[in-house]
Image (cartoon, rainbow, N blue to C red; front, side, top):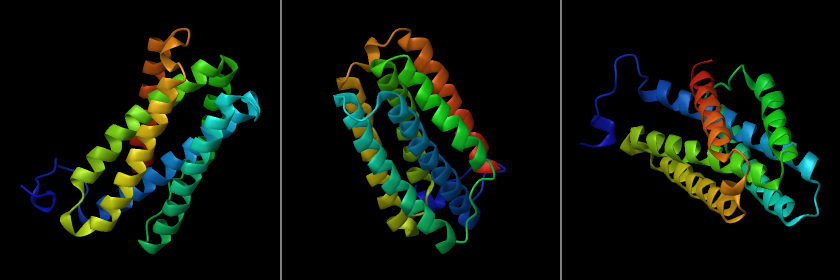
Length: 184
């Protein structure tokens, strides 16, 4: 069954409402990711190898954000009204995890990117066949998010003190942010 013929759950958006929701939540997510990395860089500085990796990830997130900032008005979608909250919360999460050390900052990246990988996969599957351009954009961004996760794993994310509960809490927060931003 193709994506355009798939039966959705009752109350789930379709057509332009689906596109509106996808663009709103993805814009919010990329905005939040930029703020997380800005918070981490504020604590880590700019000279360590970890900071250089975070700066590279932040650049890619800024490119993702710019794409959604262009798509929102093109598709007449609105951003989430929660953006001021994500401005503060994203920076705070980034700064707090970096204060716990470089490995905790990397653990934050792994947790967030695992949720985002799953989220993008679900969106790509839900999009109708005639949204090939948007599917390609989401797939490109998904692959880059997976690269961030793998980079963070290579940098010792799983060695962060309290990795499992830290990652679980960040994943839960990320899923809540997705749910809220897609609707509000």
